[in-house]
Image (cartoon, rainbow, N blue to C red; front, side):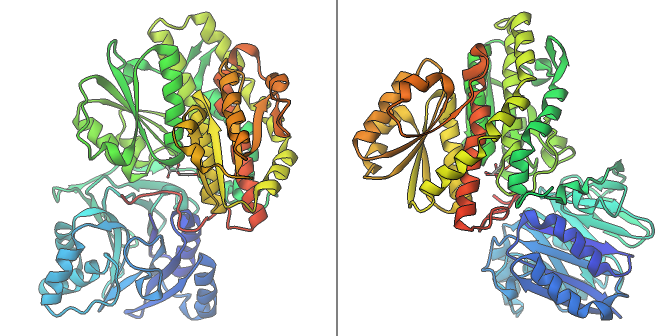
Length: 611
Ligand code: F6R
């Protein structure tokens, strides 16, 4: 992960770099730093903790460094080396400074080689090999660009880095798998880990391709591909959307993003509907074929969306679906003959595990389709076909509106493939579309139960362990509820398929253990209720989230939140979308009660670009 920035040609470059870093803080926030040139002298400012710590240090020095016109900066999510000042980027060697995002996989080997040349290492980062290689190479070549290219040829792994040296005002950048974008300014140029972060300062950007490297000064940008050929890359107009940095009166971004779901999901749904009885989804582009299945790869919350997608796609289209964690798929020699398509799901479009799984699928000749929130992200650009979730930037590290939007896209895909496969009639699709349009408003009704989830949160906030249960399409919701709770509140929580409890996890139940169950009227509710009885009999304290229709069957449960029931035919189908709101609100309120850092939970980052 980590966010990197570089600016050349703009006065008060450190301040501009800090502003960009603020937009990149979602990528890591354990320490941050800047390196800049003043009178051909390389200086750094570094601070542990959030970016505000660096900002405070910068403000003390600001007056004296206003004339600086070249700077690089970094916000860190530690991979190699503890969170200490020495390991904070930029990392220097003599007159060279480097910021890096990713992992240099052969750094151990390079370290050994450099130590033999009496290089002394001052950090425990993998990054430090880059500035050392650079300064040694500069001694030989006397040319910064050539030295940088020799480093690119030497290092292996997934990385993006920016380097400066004290002789000239120029920045070298290179990207291998990790994202990097160049912004074209008026008499200045800039690089950043994503386009949004630099969109305040430029109208046009260039996305570097994998393996590209470039050198920029204030007026020129020269780009080379992995074959060392000079290339032109497309310039793309971007619109600044800085509204995402506004909490709109909510206490946290996560709270805002939970409550804006009814509004933003209108965009998701609007983009999916072609007309009253058709959807803007093209099974031909996905290479859907009779007797062939689909593999879906994703990570974290997006993986749980994929699990729900499997239930839907198999139910409505009878196409077999294999759901896999991206990090596993790539390395396990998957048998691919029986699949014609891979769908990858990634909010950020940058999760390296998912990107690599998609590349693996391409090698295996599968058509690739991406469901992503970020247009022009690496996954979007490499996929054969993309569908966007259109929910706007998600700032809170925990995924909320992305999850519900991914579910809506997956359900729509299931319906469209069902039509394509002649399992779903046009009338059924028409009915689906009518009902889909009602979902945003319905979610507002569930959100209005906020107070009940605050009460529930107060009842469980001091627990050390919590279980989540669900059956069928709500089983992945149990997993998602548990993930959300553990990442925000640091309470140990696990999700299980309700029917699986008796095969082992039931041993965990002791007097007073909170058990949260999601229940819908799907014809299996009697079985789920029996599972609850078994838990209660062993001392479990059940908290049930159910739709109104089950009210008579669950009268024996004291702690429950009843959400409204939706239109009969679609109530259980849409239930994972509805139950997402309780899952999110419970985790949010427990974390708020416990006073944890909700938008930036410990050890996490929004976009996971390391394996
Ligand atoms: C959890 C969460 C993560 C992400 C995961 C994948 O709340 O946000 O588990 O879902 O890191 O990220 P994307 O979807 O960007 O690939």
